[in-house]
Amino acid sequence: MGILAEDGAAHPRITPVSLTAGKIVTTSAEETLAYGRRLAAGMRPPQLVFLSGDLGAGKTTLAKGIISGLGAAREEEVTSPTFTLVHEFRGPVRVFHIDLYRIEGRADLQTLGLDDLFASPAIVLVEWPERWSLATDWPVLQVRLTALPNDTHSIELVTRDPEASG
Ligand SMILES: Nc1ncnc2c1ncn2[C@@H]1O[C@H](COP(=O)(O)OP(=O)(O)OP(=O)(O)O)[C@@H](O)[C@H]1O
Ligand SMILES: [Mg+2]
Picture (cartoon, protein in one colour):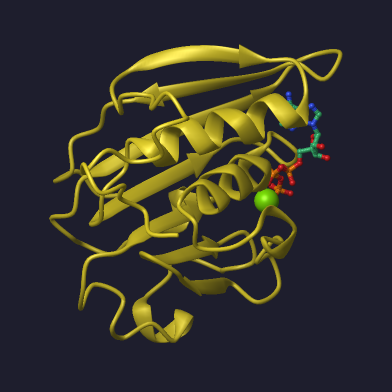
């Protein structure tokens, strides 16, 4: 199935979330997955998505929802790239899922083995984006996740100046 229905609407059964500032709270991992799928329905490449938050904040869980929502992989195929650094998915859209937790200092494309990352439009999801230093004019969606008591997690979309570093 392609990302676009014939009338051009993405995922007609899913209500897209517009990629503007806002905050929601979910009360289960399944709700965060569903929110990720709704975010995906509003995304078009090229798009850089920064997923920030502490260990266990829900970054990978949200990434699973986004990547499955994009039709690039099934939910269970999306695992944490903590040790591999980068997972690439080739579906209707090119998707990269990057985790910089284990990167010392700031990442460059050679460290990541991604010389052609920006060569064609893609959706690029980055966990631990504080360690990201690659300049691009792609639009950036900044998502800040926070774990709260009792399986509650907050998910905040922040608008961000694409020219700013880090
Ligand atoms: N409302 C919720 N939203 C997201 N995750 C939840 C929620 N409730 C419980 N969880 C659980 O919290 C954990 C979140 O882990 P996840 O791997 O997504 O975090 P992470 O931010 O990627 O961590 P890391 O920094 O280690 O990569 C998962 O085990 C998930 O099932
Ligand atoms: Mg993670």
